[in-house]
Length: 71
Image (cartoon, rainbow, N blue to C red; front, side, top):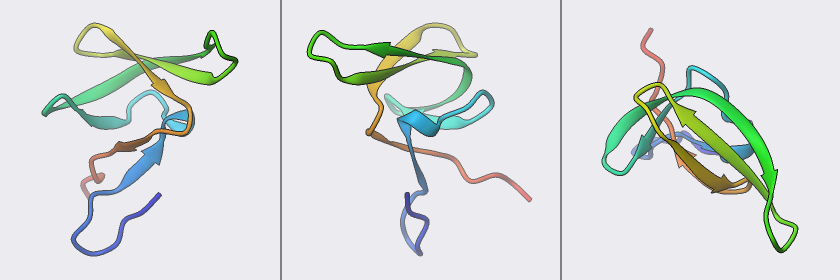
């Protein structure tokens, strides 16, 4: 996870929680719910349900771009 100057903060998919704002497919989406899943080869996946509708599956170790919280 990073957050240095000039970079976007990231969060591992395994740590994503409801309410997080994730940059995905060119838009900011809000996480509604998460569940875990085991892939065919035994890998851990996180399934994210978006507030805006739909779901997406990410490898647990994927780094996702997050939006900084406004003060």
